[in-house]
Amino acid sequence: MKKKFINLSAIFVAAISLSLASCSDSSTPEQDLMSASANEAESLASPYSNEITLREIMSSLIDPHADALWNAVRVVADSNGITEYAPESEEDWNALRISAVSIIEGANALMVPGRRVARPGAVGEFPEFEFTPEEVEEKLAADRQSWVQFSRGLQNAAFELLDAVDSRNADLLSEYGALLDEACEACHSVYWYRAGI
Image (cartoon, rainbow, N blue to C red; front, side, top):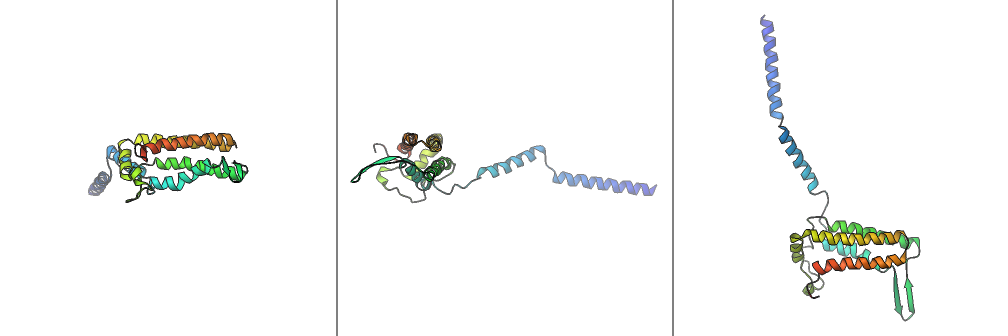
């Protein structure tokens, strides 16, 4: 009889210990959900780098590729007479495709939140005629949705150019180049040029 009592006591003590251990290590469903949400928010908060500034994206990525698309179809009048230029080879068209895709993805980069307008202390080429980076950042903070819409306008124009390139249509390439120019100027008139410029 005594042996049974000891065995039951040992089982009782083990059960209590396990119960206490599980209580100390466990959490409520609400705590589990909050912890999962916090971890998910942390992992989603910054899945990309936004160290490159808006000005750097414009000058290094968007501007050069826009120039390539605008200059692909042109007429030049000089001392040699009138010369018409248009893409002819597959190499020409493939290079233009790279430019259109680069602008499409560059527009995505412009929409990444938390990106600075320019490096600290940066000054524009014509500062008296341009908004300062600080002024642009104030505009973005006050109305980010407009910035996103302008960026999408740029992107949509680049998609049109991509269609022209893929169809090997130089006339459409010229026509849609004008749409790209309009998208650029619409944005610049709000975020770059001061009123009256």
